[in-house]
Image: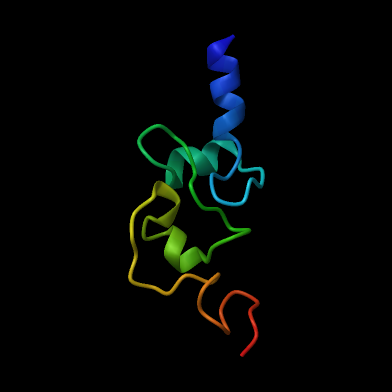
Amino acid sequence: MASHLGSAVRQRCGHCGSHVTEQFARVFGDHHNRARRCPNCDTHARLSRGSAAGREVRIPDPETSAGRHGGQN
């Protein structure tokens, strides 16, 4: 039963709680296949550089930088 619960947790973004596929978590997530960010709360440029795995990336975070990912200019 614990592995089932672990799987359900991995299918949610660790930042915003949105659903993520197991494939997204496996490809972009950390070494435990957990996604810490997802396309609903971060940009593709940041995700492809490791933000979903919990890495710091040099591209500004869309939540804190105006004018990015749907923010106001």
